[in-house]
Each structure stands twice: as structure tokens, then as C-alpha cells.
Length: 341
Image (cartoon, rainbow, N blue to C red; front, side, top):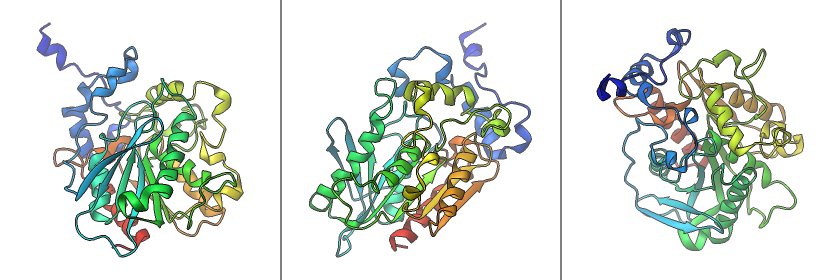
């Protein structure tokens, strides 16, 4: 067999049972591009796996006024500032955590989403380069998430002209996990420095909220266990790196669905976007339901019909319109929360 033939062998073909349910544009992009990519969980671990794009198919980042990097104790963050004059009290700020199973991704991997939020919601976006597993296991990423907010509270006004009374947090997938946890951490009595005002919003895209989930009978993943890209095997591979100890799975700073009611009740309003055919769909749906149950005022959960896990990063013209719609919806929700619409 020639090398060209080998190159064209599907490495992650679509499961027949899922095809009738999938968005047609996603099917085309998967068959043309994604099925030929070697899934990282099927090869021996090497940090160089991180050099490949986490998910192909995104548009180019939008033009912003200024980009600048800042150091934290053990890692760094990247800020995106809009063009034009800041509001009189300073810019609202959106602290963002990328996806990648706590293992892949970086502050550069979801720049399209970050710049869209910056430009369309007229806010500073800070993307956090939290430390990754398996080199840095739970709860290291949580510690970096907490420090990123502490940095904004201490330095945001002087460094980036940030209005620290208008802070939102968010993230995708594992980054959504960190964002939800951060909204709860700030309400612990030990959190310092204290917020000058409560967080105004959380924006969660396909978040991980329950690390006890499985594809067994009755499990959260059972219905979508044959979904493309992020199946149970890949998700468990990520979890084995970040949360190798089963006793940690039910701790609320690993699985925020298990957080105490008194912390959940103080969480900010939320927008949660999930894919109908994502194994993480019910993580997001059930977390939204829990927030509503404990009295969080505004919680909007949007389910993108026919969408599997990676749609946010696939908004390009050759990919899926679902991704572009999700980004638009997220930007509109963030604009509304900040009052910048």
C-alpha cells in the first residue's frame, strides 16, 4: 500500500448509529478532514501531541486593539483589549479558560473565540494558560484559575484599565469546568482579596461538571457514547491524566455539580451552550438545572441540535454554521451581562 493510501485511511470514522442525528455540515467536515486525524488517546503520550491544533476548522481571530501577556506565579495569561476608548470606569473583563481535557490546548488555541468576545462584547478578555496534566494534576489548574482572578483584582485596573466591578468568567469543556469552580471559590470565606462586587456572569461552553460520569447503563454519557471526536475513551484518557485518583472525582473543585448549596446559590447568572450529541451535554444541562433550583436568577441553557462536542472551534466557512451560531449567541449573552450590547 502506498503512503498516500495509508494517509487516507480513516482513523476515526463516524459510527453508523450517530450519522442520522448529526448536523449535515458537521458530517461533511468530519468525513473530509476530521476522520483522518489520529486520535491522541490511541498513541503513546508525548507532550509534542500538544503541537497539533486541538480542533481544526476555526475562522481567523478578529482584530483587537492590543494584545499583551502577563506572568502569574507558575504560568502566564494573554489579554485582548478592544479598539477605541475605554468606558469611563474602565473595561469590563472576561476571564477565559480554554478546553483540551486539562491536557491539551493553550492561550493560543481558542483565540478566535477570545477575540470574538473581546470585539463583540466590548470587553477585555484574559485567556489563562493554566498548567496542564499529566505533568500537573488536579488541583493545579484550579490554583492557576484562582490566581488569574486574584491578579485581575490586584492589577487589572492599573495594567489594563479594567473595571473590577464587572468581571465575568467562562471557558470551554475542561476550561468550563475551571470557570464554574472559580465562580464558587470566590464565595468561600478564605478567598482573598475580596471582590469589590459579585461576579456578573459565567459563560460555559460544553463544560465538564461531573467527573463521575460514564457510558454505562443510566450514565450521563450512555445516550451519546458513539458520538464523534470526544467519546468515552478519549474523555477517560483525559481524566486519567488530570484526576488519576478516583476519590477526587466527587470533590466539588473537580466536579462542581457536587458543590454545597450555599456556594451554588451565590453563583452568578449563567449562559450554558451544549451540543445535542456531546457526551458532555447532560453535564451542562444538569448544572444549569441545579443553578436554577438553588435560586440563581438567570440561567439560559442552549442545546445545539445535531452538534457534537467540538462545534465551538469549527465556525469556519468550510466547517459548521452551528459553531458560528454558538459564538454569536455567547457574545450576545456576554454583551447583555456587561450592558455593552
